[in-house]
Image (cartoon, rainbow, N blue to C red; front, side):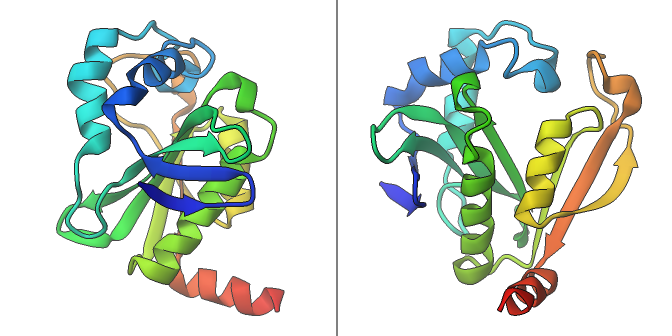
Length: 188
């Protein structure tokens, strides 16, 4: 089922047919560099943990994670997520995405994230979008800024494993519905 389309992307429900694509994505050390330090993925973990988490229904707006495909080719390029931070507060969501390395630099992260944020505010009752990344992940930070999220704070999480760059901590970005509305009015 298609959740949303942009000029170049289609976001659709993730299914069991996506296991191999998800495994390849999560097994790429460069893709996972700022997630787990680039450690290899396990196909068994993708099947038993990742896929069920990505296909879990959320009462507020159905799925919270979608496969991203190029509209022109149908090629899997990654996934996007808009997950409630707290199940009791579906109006505050965490924006996330992960793209194949060959899809980097094409503007897909910004395009998909912008469309998802817009849909959240316009149709899903979202009042605040948050996102975090490692301080040293400059590319993701730039995407969040392009989407309209603003820097909130730098913090240090209690992560189970130290990875390169984690000594610099993480950063949180956010965008409220009111700020999103004001930016739309300002653009005219």
